[in-house]
Length: 167
Image 1 (cartoon, rainbow, N blue to C red):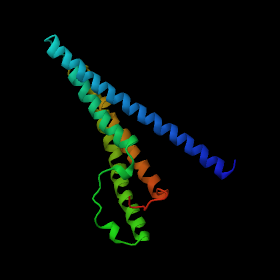
Image 2 (cartoon, one colour):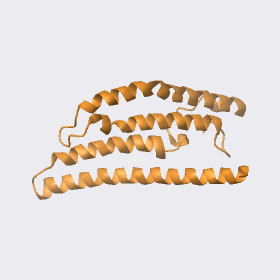
Image 3 (cartoon, helix red, strand yellow):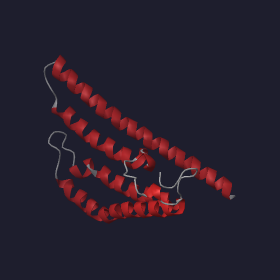
Image 4 (cartoon, rainbow, N blue to C red):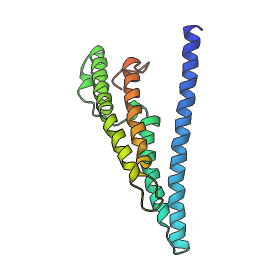
């Protein structure tokens, strides 16, 4: 298999995975929205609010935030304070960009074992209404942290093409 065929095949797989991540994010947002709609209808149309809709909306909100951060929002779109790096030459910008990504990825990598341990511990506790284990409810944070590490590594070794590395 030639290098160009392999890279186009990898790009196709990456595009499908990105599309799947976006679909999952949209589905999570739909669950959040529908839970809120059901709550409003039950509360104001029927006068009997449902506690499960509030809990489901809260859980879906947590998942939407962490899922989107980890899988859907590009690194360049994340919030960053960038007033020092642009003052350097492009080569220095790339080095500083890589150092920043290495620091961010390293912090998340350092936190992975503790996060996994805490989620395992929280499997014994359950949510008040739906009785879901908190370890599963917040497991998206472990996936998000792992994905941040992988995305930082990918950005260090394969900076975006056609843009300055500091973006």
